[in-house]
Image (cartoon, rainbow, N blue to C red):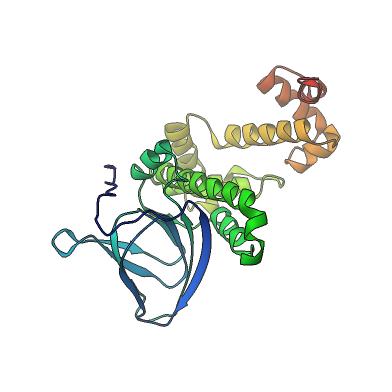
Length: 278
């Protein structure tokens, strides 16, 4: 997707004080905001209702649609006019990031990213955490707010990249991966997985081989093994407990796949992680 232009030359534009500000607002149906000049990088999350944002001057006007449960990144220096849902009340939240807070590298990454994508639970939790810090705590919470601002940028870019990758994959694969990740601890039969994707077992296998270079079964066991290895490195759970949590029927099967994937036994993998740098 072509990069968006970032124009800070507007004579009415004055950079805001470097800061991270979280906020939220509610509008009645048909509410508006603007026209105004955007002074920051601003991530807008539509929690209820939708918004239509007219950007630019009349002669160069373009429209940005922000559906319900989506987020949009607005750029500093742009003239914008919000027109909210005509039929429903609107509740939206935002994170404003001062232009001096955002690095040039991140500016370029933001410009090259689609401006709107789905609001994920991960992004929603970040915004809710920012909103939970009252004004009275801001002086003592500047370090936390700064880290949250960085997280918001990285989360926006990560979610946009993930959404782009998902859009390149057949819907059946997206459904299958989501089902596997949500049910990793439980027994999963390929027939059951195919039924969740509304296709046959053979078709699902063909799609996985064509798009991921593996089969659904191998994908499932590789993911379980990787998750199990993560637990070995960061917890004191026994091999048996870990193998059960990630969906293996026996510790022996788990240990065998750990050796195949990492070239070490579970015990050695844990010792290397725990003693690294010691």
